[in-house]
Image (cartoon, rainbow over all chains, first blue to last red; front, side, top):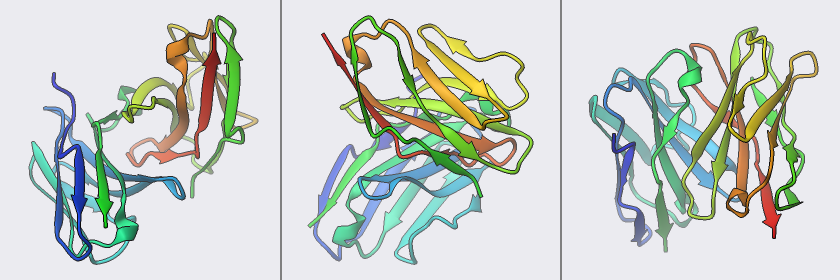
Length: 115
Length: 114
């Protein structure tokens, strides 16, 4: 298995531009998570999906952030318009579902820099 | 709400020695899972070990073992026979069973010296 695949690995964009981050979970994993990592706030859960349905988006910072999961093999996290404070590493993770002992498999992350 | 506390921001350990990373948690749920992840300088998050709240024995995975003390709400990670490749940030995390959300501590940086 190729693991959780995220793209792009690095993204540099200007303030005000739209940014789209992509994630392909492991085949067969029913749950998908988007996390953001910063020095100041550590790892924060933004949103998670179960069977393609958003279950909890309480971690999404504001309306500029949106996430979709149109099918079991693809998810996007969009920021529009982007701001410098959105600069962070964004991780996608997936898990087979209930039964936490499976662990959560993380992608390599997208390092976003908004200038 | 769940809270994970890692009080050691950074630690140094000599190669081949053991190191213990502290983790305490706070939850009112009876069923939960505890995880440890490793994040090397390359940035990826690597799953190391899992402990369920009802597991009778402490979890072990190779050189990693989890010292689970339920009454104290602690889940310390022990790395035995440290190697230079163990130098990384280590995160403790917890989820409620069936909730899926994984909450992370602030992390502990481990530096292994030759």
